[in-house]
Length: 407
Image (cartoon, rainbow, N blue to C red; front, side, top):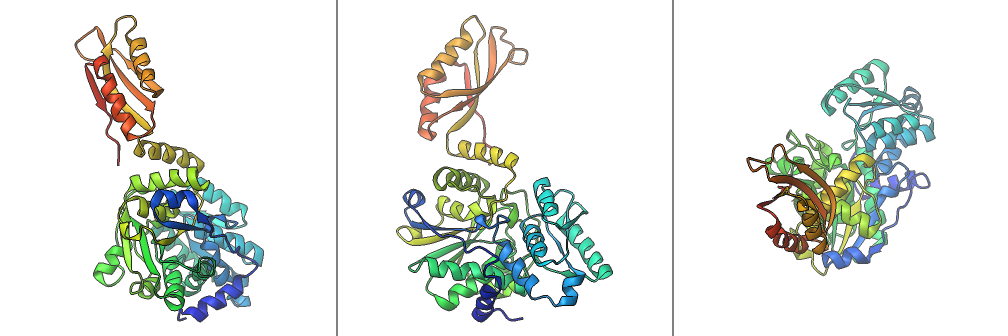
């Protein structure tokens, strides 16, 4: 099935009333932060927390009655599973999802709660996909690919149509790049209706599937590394999706993990939005400094998913605070004589910093039995404050060593 503007418009009509038309408001704080006029497409506000509902609903609606009766199956560790599960339940279509055993428990339980049969198999998406193919053949279920099925791509393109109506004057749109299903649909919609808008894709440095495919001229297999943007960590982009969007994407930016962590923090603080790493990657692209040409321009950020594990969120926020210079950990060697620790704590307080955690070590502090080693975490106001704290504490420490951040 060819994907063009008419296909996407038909998908928009097909899913109307079942998938939310999410808001795309202007963000004054993000505009002040980035130097652009920022609009945020809040698709993490969908019922299942991501844009994946669009394609899932569109694909399910086009099944014949026999296929509906047999049901559908997909391999997914996240948002595609949730979208299929929810809309399959609404439409009375049985849904089976095969997830790796490493899939987040919150997404496993949410898919079950939405009525799906969930099978956990294998340590990777590839192993889960092989199991799904096996079950599809054995039970006659229709396999619905999460980002390369034409109906999925057309459904995701409806996000682009909404943004075109919501932000009449726009210079650029930044879209996350994973398997490329969302990008393909959005790019077709934009380049057909408003070809002058610059389309920028963003991928995690540890998951460069699109960049590798573009360099090779066709999809190639990569091994994604660990990334906060797990929704972008695919091993290969979709063939249909890549062929559609490769010539339409104007620029691709790769973002580091520190940029993603900081973007998640900024969105929580300034936009009051809790999003997953793949969604925050669009803001991370601006924060990275790699898009200086957009200064003063009107830019839409696609915030496509909000399904982040609360336990992960707390750790990511701490990483973001560390990147921002608002948490600092260092090692100090101080006097272990009476009053030594109190004097050190008073010195920290005098700088305006707040001690969050301290570990006091004597046995392994070296040959000087009159000294103790501290590992101290403090809350600060930013990098200049950290520097001033370090300067102020030097007189209280034989050695003052800021911890290396793992980024």
